[in-house]
Length: 404
Picture 1 (tube, helix red, strand yellow):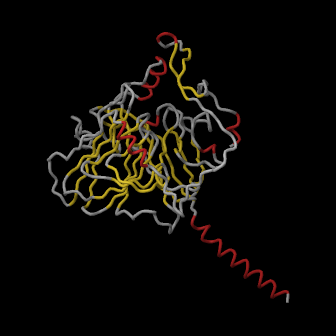
Picture 2 (cartoon, one colour):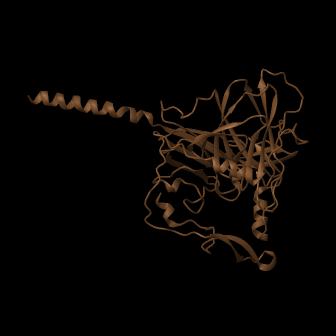
Picture 3 (cartoon, one colour):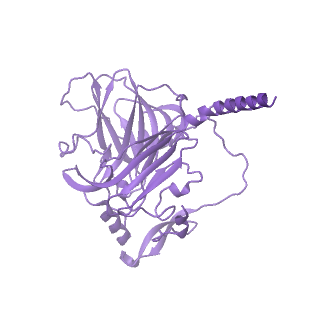
């Protein structure tokens, strides 16, 4: 009788283990290595050393599935301190892996390394990673693609291909010198010399031959392409357009949306949008544009970045691509039309869980104030504040960081 009981217990244990197996094997540990190095890059007829990850500008794309564990080793081979922030990742009990220097971690010093260890929980879509110290994020950035769990489909038609589109900026001067000058003077930083699409200003520049002619995307008539659009610009909202085409927006900032059609996408700094592009225009070449949206009269880089979509098979030609003018810099109605169209998918599989009861009401008044500044004209600078309190960046690490 005892032997039968033992056999029964073993069988039950095996059944329980087997039932747990799919959950175990669906989640993976994904390892990446980021070597932070200097790289000479030429844009706008100017060659300069920039800080990069693995010598790439933009940096490498990280791929994972929902619930995967990510281990990213960052090795600092440059003379700056470095941290990496995983923009939009829900750091559940792993706040020390979030990345803001002196806020959640000590920066990685030259010659040192650090392993970021976090799990992607309850998220899928496109996000951004970037440096989070000084202005290194101008060149140290890349996309994060979080796929659904294994065997879980997209809540929209499967595209023929997925394409990473990273919008950014380029300065001919040293970006660290730009921000240092701004902090010392209390004035706005000098605007960028160009916007970029996947690292290139575009074919309109007189230096385009040195820049490789800008980013090019080949498409096939009748196919659908999921564009994973990331705004890695430092401070600017950007309009994104493909001349002669419209998009179906299906996700923003890692959250599925109710699909809607538009010819213009607005992406804020650090934000992302997934949109399906149908290659349904007449075969030819069409311009992609990324241009600034700003509804206040302050200096801004108004020149758009330009890339080109080319239908295949189409003979290579020097004929200019079809170019629809981008929206005006202050095109508020265009921006509001996009924002007002955003709705969460709120389906049975992806419900919008909104708390219906409020326990505490908090008031945050966001504004500007004036702080003393010995090096600034007039002895003061304008600063942002919340409830009349400004943020002062720490210069030393808190002792609590050493517990991790």
